[in-house]
Length: 220
Image (tube, rainbow, N blue to C red; front, side, top):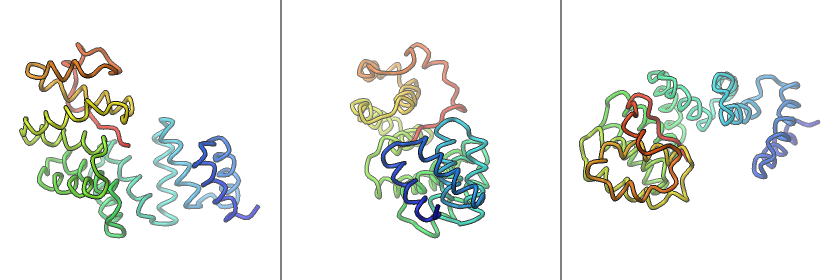
């Protein structure tokens, strides 16, 4: 079957949530061209969603090797920063932004990388750009709240967490968990906020045992 036709079918599969059909059509493309950029990118996205991060990284690297698409570069950068490979991740996301500086995901990725490496001023600038482009999305607010904590801007962080607490219906379970973990910094002054958190996915008493090095806010 024509590869271009299969690409369009895969796009329809993804829009309509037909993951198994998408995988079957990707397999058909990859049998014809194992290094096909689009098929490897979508395959990597599905593998990442299923927790197969090593396979996802390999698929995205194959995709980037065939076509340095800015969105794929950012996807790979995000995955590498999750593994602590900040230098490689920053190089990739900056290459993505050099091609397209209107992708808020890439600015978010850069902000998180700079925050993790202690470049707080640069992180603030990147996250501000992300929010300018995309508005007050939960993932961006979570990363900004974490940055405010590192900057010791406690009142601003608290206000942001309070606004997030009222938007749990817009958040994924992982984002709610991240929000709860951040509130541990304010348990002694934020009992009213903790009372708002009615749909958390872990017992509140465990919040105090959170390891700061394990925190990673979930994306939209």
